[in-house]
Length: 557
Image 1 (cartoon, rainbow, N blue to C red):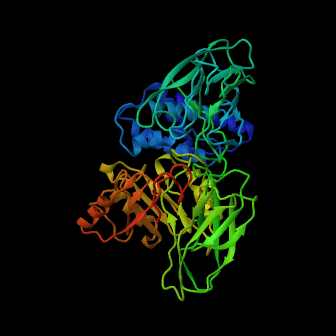
Image 2: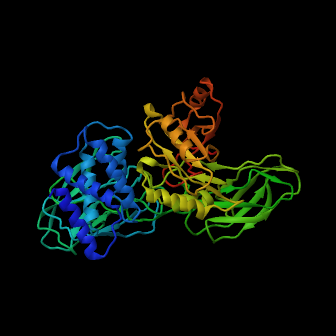
Image 3: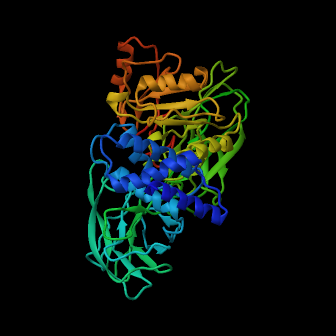
């Protein structure tokens, strides 16, 4: 009897004994157990990596649909092989199989992680503790914790040298027999040097061992020695990452722990901005949104001042102090055609701001609706939850429509379902429309990045780069699985799309502006190749801030 067969029988016996139903089909379970055994017998190579990555891809997506934690780097590891045809350096593939195998065999092996979740004010100093409770798998000498940082989360610079200084990081355990030593590991990706590997703070168990129920607390901004704490980022979020990785023993297998929902909120009011429709009819009621913001353009914290509201320089209304940072003035209208401009001033005269101009016409032949077709959250390499993304689009940016176009190389099936559910949940006809979409994320020479939008969210299959790795295959896959009239594909110039190719039914627009810059040349290349396309702008914001990500440059559709 082979090792794989023994492993399969062991898993099935455990499931039968517990009464649980396996989340994998018998056929996929057999392939998964063969994969687990194979990497222990022979490391992945050019000859075996692609087949193994395909099995891992199927396994990951099935595992994700259980709702359990999916290792943060697993989908991108698969993508490096299936999408980018990586040759060599297959250790990440084997490590991901081993990591998922631990979670698959014993959900309690990983233990639990909790944190002080705040809220904390932007650019303040604070102390945050993350506490790990050891699960069924013990941490042996040489094992420990990798204290990573997200490359976009601009906390203060971690340090362990001077307890009296700011940003001091410390570690302590409930087990008095355990001592830690400080070292580093080389780490790349979203929790390291994004484009290259960098040294990352690591605490190793120097003596003793951590057993089930022991706790380990990592304190960010420890003030016991006299420091002020850890400097918080300058942007707000409902899930600001403080990534931690677990090492069970003296090895290079890093196990990612679930990101905790640490909240960062705005600070005192430093500005005000208004949002209104661009075109309304004479006498038509509309809504004006007045948003108090801090000096980093986050939604401001209390207290909120009172505002004087002006139209074309004349006093129009008052907003009393207090209440929420975003105030809605409803049922406004103008009885004469013309261009109207709102402005605002705090009642103490210290803060001023404006809103977009409004064109009032007798019978408007056209309307202008503003949206953002390209933005990201923590579902990929960004920061924040999908819910925060939608709330920001609807309430903070006052968009008419939005697409949460998450990178497919970081997305699993569970996350795709969440995006579709959010479209249904947040869309409200006549007020705010969310379009289901994703970013087909491929290298330039394979076709470049393209955002894919669907008319409706129901029964939409994404055509991912892992399975459709060239632009022609993307076009073919979309046409095979969807009506072309229900799909819009938008290439963009950062990681630029292949302007030699264009499907005129699927791809009527080209993105030529985002936070990465303005790319008129990119649109011109499509025209030079004879394609009849229109042009669009978007934010490509990665902090769950679609549509209003000032002061960083960006665009709107």
